[in-house]
Length: 227
Image 1 (cartoon, one colour):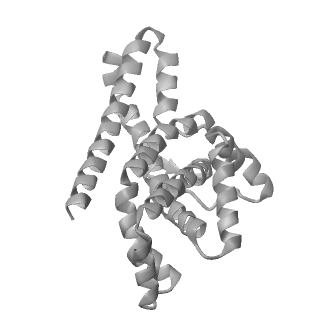
Image 2 (cartoon, rainbow, N blue to C red):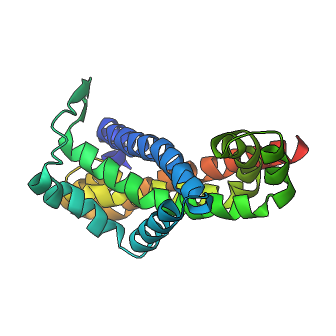
Image 3 (cartoon, helix red, strand yellow):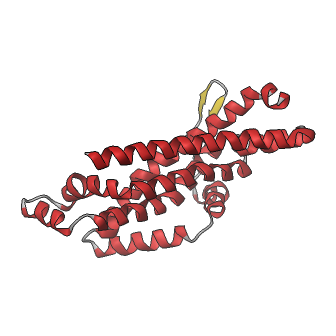
């Protein structure tokens, strides 16, 4: 454990990168996924078909390919993310970080969309009809009536999607983001004799983070059921 303790600062910094990727991609994927879900059940046929094609295409594309596209192919078509350059203490969020975060958002939002669509389908049709009967437009029906109820039904699959997102952040380490996986790889290369304890330490932290997310989702589900 001496190697882990001696490098505790670097390990903590790596998990800060991991958690920042998770928070940024998690929030944006929820927003974008909700818009996709609304498009998929909306009255505009073109938007329904476009959202369906997007979701089908992205869900069947490996995450690594999506991130590689934004990292290497994106700059060829002008997606450089050069406007992102934020430094807080030892944490630097640059264009590489932004490209990986956007890749995570694009990929995760397709799964968020399907989770929310399942929740929308669980809402009784009479709810939407009653909202339209009192004059609410489609946007008002979705935001004020359907989505709040759909979130309750969709919470378990949404929690699974967010847990998967936390684990998917490790893919960014392969492209140069200084997150947990990249730091673990560096430590195991520098301290080959302590590979087991390094691996166990990182695995334990990931397990703790996943359990915290699971507990938060469980508490939210219980609270919403009571309400």
